[in-house]
Amino acid sequence: MKDFGLTVWGDDNFVIAGDTVCINHASRPSLLQLTQEIREKGYKGPLLLRFPHLIQKQISTLFNTFETAKETFGYKGEFHAVFPLKVNQFPNFVHALIDVSKPFRYGLEAGSKAELIIAMAETPIGAPITVNGFKDKEMIALCFIAAKMGHSITVTIEGIGELKSIVEVYEEFNRNSTSPVAPKIGVRIRLHASGIGIWAKSGGYSSKFGLTSTELLEAYEILRSHALLDKLWMVHFHIGSQMGDIAPLKKALREAGNIYADLKKRGANALRAINIGGGLAVEYSQHQRSEERNYSLSEFANDVVFLMQEIAKSKGVEEPDIFTESGRYIAASHSVLVAPVLELFSQEYSAKALRQKAENPPLIQELLDLYSTIERTNAREYLHDALDHMESLLTLFDLGYIDLEDRSNTEILVNLIIKKAILLLKEEGTDELRKIQDRIQERYLVNFSAFQSLPDFWGLAQHFPIMPLNHLSSKPTNPASIWDITCDSDGEIGFDRKRPLYLHDIDINQEEYFIGFFLTGAYQEVLGMKHNLFTHPTEAVITFDENGTYRIDSIIEAQNLMDILDDLDYDTGLIDKMLKQKIEESTLISKDEKEELLGKIYLYLSENSYLKTIQALKEDQGV
Ligand SMILES: *Cc1c(COP(=O)(O)O)cnc(C)c1O
Image 1 (tube, rainbow, N blue to C red):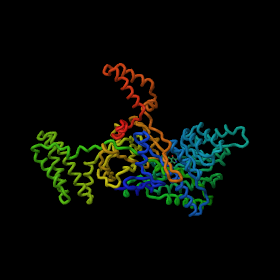
Image 2 (cartoon, helix red, strand yellow):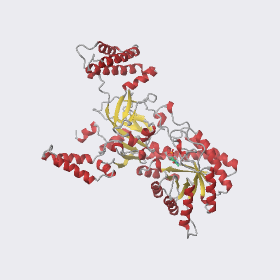
Image 3 (tube, rainbow, N blue to C red):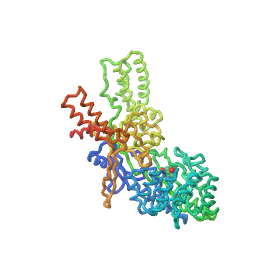
Image 4 (cartoon, protein in one colour):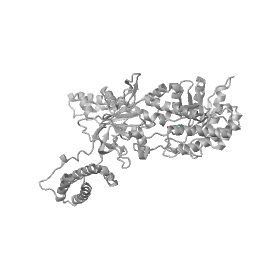
């Protein structure tokens, strides 16, 4: 796996050139070069790199694929799309998205009041806004205000109670008006079909959301009796995120298509759109055999267009406009988290660390012999012998027959033998060998927090592609597990025999080794939590001009220690005072030293809470 599965998950966004991984666009800078340039400006700790050209690629691919599908089938409805803000609300992302999507009339979807405010302010007039989720009267009033601004906004009704609020707000807003203004109305339907996978709960009969058939008929009557039927224009569903299999979508489309057609025939004449929600999956897998998605975007688009056309034809209604709210698909690829390795945790297993005695216990002597004579033909046998000797030696230690030095020599020798055997037997790839790799895995302590930057790994065991930024022309040989810097044992991405990750053997005292975590642009940022008070990493936006030259802009530094405490509502003035006072009053500090120590504290308080690599500390000291 020298390419770290790039052909499975990379979508041609990155390319390995020489021994580094580069952006496969314009001047093709390497991720290492970008990282080093940002660090030279003085930013330390993990970095989140954003690439707007990848947002643009996803949006244009989405629109173009649906336009192609429409042409293929001669479909008469329009295609529209909105970005669901819950997937990523960060300003550097949203601004880039609005900027690159100008040619497409791409809009925003909001699921809360705060998101609605972002949508009202940022969406260009003429591009659609959809509003989903639970709403109170105030939120509905905001939708009416948006309509009065000239926005093309659709409020989706999730329950009958909301519809009653809409009727009330409508009457309040238009009491004295001769030309009433109101948002368009959508109905979210409760599907019989549901998604599959870890995010499937948004669809199906037990879903939190949507109207049952009975409630739909009731909603229809309420709208009719308040002369609002001409506002009902969209049928909406969402079957859950990261839909790995296309089958549930097809079922949902049939269900929703028939509901659309029946409501239309009943007299909902303004009905014109079907909103298929999100769910379009992203390939996170680094291994061909564990792919997460069984369909392509064109299959997805063709299915949607074909099924809608078929239902419209058979029921004799016009072909609806199609809306999608894909979020993960649009946002995931745009960002890469880059974090330096701080330490490797099994370097103690080097032959240099052996403490040989004038006379070693016989079994240790045998281990030494095995280690010095192991070769391809005897590797399997010697490996078994070594494991057997280890069991015996550990028992001898428990019984008091050998000492701590002997035990340490045992650990070192057995690990060295396993490592050598694995190298010698690599081609054979047997199950036994794979199992044994667990024993010699190298632990890479990486300067990031899984809770902050990969919360779906912690919460849902979602895998994200991982690869080092350089050394890519040499084969990585260490079975690796990754430790984050939180004091929580859940912050570990363990070595997985079924999906093994190998990293390089690096001397961290000599050079920095950076790990990239890919496809982190959807959901991870806002779900990330400040466990142990590690905050959102320093971020930067990388754009390319017409000549293909890159620019690094919009750097937002990770919060410093005082700001973090301020966020938790500590009185930072008081913290400051207490620290000063304790230094002042301490009898362990001389008068001269007091100033120096205070100076140090203030310097540290102005920095973020991530750790510094050995190289970064050297740079700080001007070495
Ligand atoms: C979350 C959500 C989406 C986005 O789903 P993705 O899987 O990220 O595409 C779309 N629509 C609604 C209603 C949602 O709740």
